[in-house]
Image (spheres, rainbow, N blue to C red):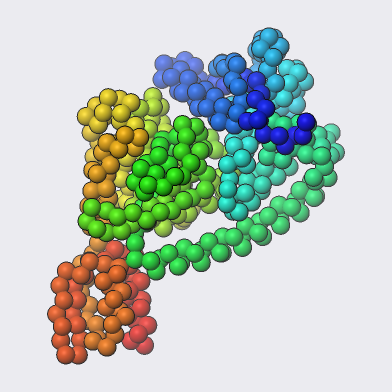
Length: 434
C-alpha cells in the first residue's frame, strides 16, 4: 500500500502519551488533563483511532528515551496488548529519543511537531499555505538528519508522517533539502508580494475589516457561517480551518463590513510552523476590529485566552501588529448554550456572550461591532472644490457624512471616518493640491 494513502481511509490504532513534569499542584493536574484531551483531539482529527491515552509523570528527562526505563517497558506491553501502530508523544522529541523509542516499542513514534505538521499538510488549501507547510516540514526533517542516516528514505515521508517508512528519496541529503528550502522561500516571497497587492486593493474598498481569532476549536468558523450565511468547513475538531476566508456582511446600522476567518491558535506551536502560522494572521494586522472568539465552556478557557493573547502580543513586539491592538478587541464568549444559555455566562467588560450554533446573542454581537466602529471614527471637516466630485463621492463611500454646506466654489463637508480612511483621504487631498 502506498505511503501516501490517507489515514482517514485506513484507520490506524494509536496511543497518545503526555509526558508531564509538574504534577504536584491540583491546577497542574487539571492542566495536564486538558492538554492530554487536546492532544487526543489533534490525533483524532486526522483519522487515528485512539485506543489508549495516558499522562506519564516525569521525574527527570532521559536523554536517550525521555521516559524512564520502567515507563518504556510498561508502554511497550500496552502497545502489544492494544495492537498500537503509532504512539503520539505530546512533546518535542530529539531524533535520538524518537529512534530509541521506536526500537523499544516496536512501532512508529511521532512527536507533537510531526503531528501538527501532518494536520497542517492535510488542511492547507491555498498556495501559500501549502508552501509554508512544505517549508516547515523540510526544516523539521532536516533536524531529523543525524550522522548515521545518509538518505531521507530513512525519514518519515511527505506530510504523512503516519504512512509508510519514508519519502522514497524525494531528497537525497541535507544539501538537497537546503536547496529546496531556498526555492520555497523565493516562491513564498512572490506569493506574499501578490497578497500584499490584493490587500492594498482591498484598502480602497469602502468597508472596515473585522477579523476572527481564537484558540482552535473555539467555534470561529461556525460563527463565521452564522453571520455570513457561508458554508466554510466547520467541524468539532482542531484546526478545521487553516486558510483565511473573507465575506461581506451588513450591520444593523446598514454599514457593510468584511468578516475574515483565520486559523485557530494552539499552545506550544512547533517552531517550524510559527512563520507559517503568523503569515495566516496578517489579515488580523489590517483589521479595524478583532473578535477574540473563546470557548467559554472549555475547562481550560482562561489558559487558552492567555495563549491567544501571547501570540498577538508577540506580533505586536515584532511590529506586525499595532502596540495598542487590545483597544480593537471584542471578546466573544462562545458556546454559551453548553453552560445553559447566555445568562449563565459570567459578565465580562468588553465581551459578548453568544452561541454560534443556536444564534443566541448574534444580534447583540453585531450591535457591539457597530458601536465599536462608531467609537473608533473621527469627526473631521473638509472643504472640497465643487468641480472635484470624485473626492466628495469617496467621502460618502468610506464615511458617514453628518453635514454638508454647498457654496458656489466649494462644499464644506463634516464626516465621520475611521482613522485609516482619514489618512488615506488626506493623502489623496494632498496629492491633488500639489
